[in-house]
Image 1 (cartoon, helix red, strand yellow):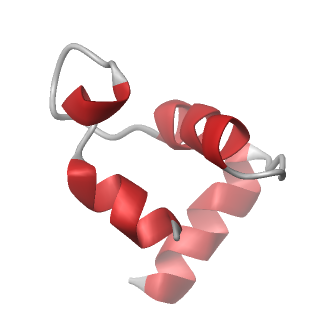
Image 2 (tube, rainbow, N blue to C red; image 1 turned 90 degrees about the vertical axis):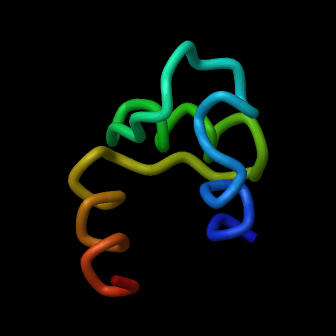
Length: 50
């Protein structure tokens, strides 16, 4: 689930700091799930899910 992957933090996914960006989340989704999303779509999803 995406929330579990985000909870691990960016360092666990190979980024050099603990900052999530929409671009990083988009890359994570592409790596872990058979889905592609736009940055706008990711932003809307995050707002809906808090």
